[in-house]
Amino acid sequence: MEIKIGIRNIAREVTLDIDMTIDEVVEAYNQASANDTLLRLTDTSGRQTMIRATAVGYIEFGKEHAHPVGFGTAK
Image (cartoon, rainbow, N blue to C red):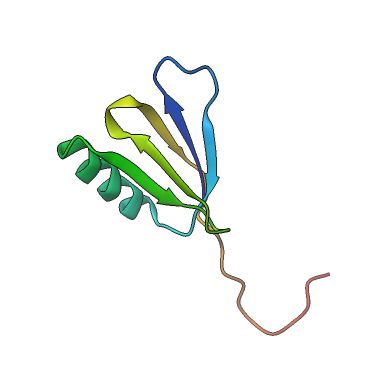
């Protein structure tokens, strides 16, 4: 799923493609925010991004990845 994270006082947003559900991202953010720590996310290529939870302005969620079903080839 693609997510976009807006950071306070930064004009550019961070875009990540991750293998987490919306609930998992929300839980990770809630824990980081409650403990005043870094929000740590790993994208699909293994790169880690860390953002101070208090600096997050918003998180925009895209569609979750659809898992193909069946054995046919796409045309």
